[in-house]
Length: 460
Image 1: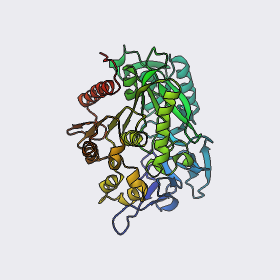
Image 2: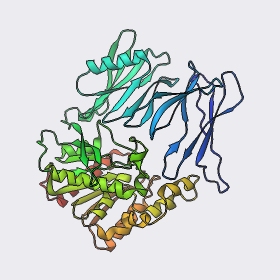
Image 3: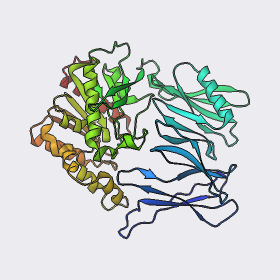
Image 4: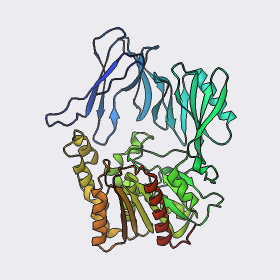
């Protein structure tokens, strides 16, 4: 259960999710509220999660004590929108912000009281709409004042909000933290996010589109090596994790590394990604794997047909669901990609289901993965014989998101049918591999693997 307060010490909203007889979480969460200076709880809303992971119903996330309203997200014509509901007993409901093209799915909050000051959505870039006129004015002024192509966000504030921590960063700029004094309008540098990259020339990121086989226009992000003309390069398709996720414009350390090593990197927002509404999401990236993976494969074909990628110099690289997508792309298009790198990948959908067995979310995971022939057909480990490209995998043995047994199984299956596979297991690390030495090792091994598999000249 969650209990959002009003920021002044009073809990105004309560969530309840009753377990089933078997101990599993229910698919519906009920929310209750209480009026100001009243201890009696009253029904507010119910949020139901369907079989593919989509939710419906108002999900309250914050209370504004001055307006006496709850802010939250709900579906509006197939996309997430920001609503507010009065907590005075009337339950008056109004749309605060919506978009016809993408989900509005982020609240912008600030300070110790986590005051709601705006909301955000992502088209090509993440854009914030500020309800607070002073912050909107400051945001726009900082965009004009700071050099380069950047996005600005307010990270935190003092209790009286007279001092703000500001972050400014862009695609070729890992970002810098500043301290802003409202009284003097003085902006002081605090620290760079990645000082080690100060003298490194980074790559710009461009929003593009390409057509899938069925004609659907797929958005994507293209990162080219700095100084490159963007023609006949070794190239990587890099599907994101999730599957309930998406990429956005900005600094991406993984894509930047490969661009620095001379690779073009294309990050497709394949169908099954979140942020584009229910129709784009389909039945999630597992149950609708053919569509999602088809879009990833078509990203590779686009790189070749456009002349960005050199023939026989194309790889697919991904993490988590992205690792799954990389492996499954090599199953469905065995002659397209010449190298595969998968970090902490899902490799067997039935195994993924079994990892949740005994936990309270098992029923939801079971429905999310679904049942049917897609379980076998959509599992790379069950189709290892179809993969022609050499495979490199990494996994932490303490991964609680995707069990390490998935990579171990994939390695056994590939070796069992005589395929080329290298597997690196990091001891004591989880899904994120949050260790400098491990990540540096992963990057170095990945670069050397790709240069061997794609027959590229070594680069110091």
